[in-house]
Image (cartoon, rainbow, N blue to C red; front, side, top):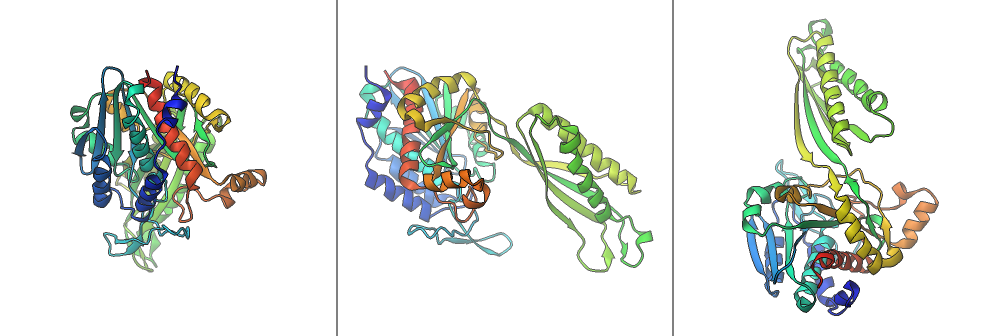
Length: 417
């Protein structure tokens, strides 16, 4: 019987092509839902495979459908947008691109979250499956998604008719590079990435001259009371065994030095591994906000609005168990158990649209000597560049090799004959 590792090894990916593609993507990042050049490059790369390319789905979404007889349908998603971060890695293929923001500022753009690895690995898995058709049967769908960094790309593809344009998958996969020993494949059942929302709170007040506070209802003071009380929600209303984050990400009030403003605004960012805990915390936030506004003497109500929603990424346990066995066979000691992460992803929107189970794993990308030293000295936060930092750069060879083999292994777990 041919093993999955033997199938993968029977068609080694052209390393020159693979590296050239990765460096091209890394040097030319584009911001979310502005990925016109990346879209064109992916369409060019996919043209050499025997597949049906369905595009665009939404603004820049792409699906490559590899049909190979009867069998299961497997979908693997990779994201390809960059971030408004000025790169400081010093890599010879570093990005030097800049863009102008809506307010006229010039910012650098960078693949500071590894989406260039994700995309290169999925194209490499396509290359493997396209050239090993005698060893598998069914349908393989490679989904390339824009706009993940703003949490809008997956929804854009769904609203663009994704579920009508491609076969419904039986299982859905995804992966993400993260700090950790480069080349290790890290996986777990259940919650992997947190659910998240941002919350905008508008606090009413009454404006007055700064010398006459008795004529005002000072919204900055009300905002300060709300901020103080918010810190007690996680500390005093959430079970210590549960996970919750309530961060006050911004506060804005007033425009000059001698006027008490008429309103203030807070923006919060919240994260959870449990829908039950999330509901409890959101109820507490709204209770605190409205109570403090009432205590200030205002006759107007605060407004609380939610945006930038991210679904809980909650791996299917049976799917995890099945694929993890193959990961253990292919990667041996390099297949390890992941920790849950507090970051968020819009990946679950894709499998939820189809009602399909999903499994999302992580690939370590930090040079092993750097990681091991930082862990030994308890300095991971200080000494290891993490996603979204201007110095974040995966160690290429072990990371791309593991990501490519993991993508192919997951697919062949269901498609191999």
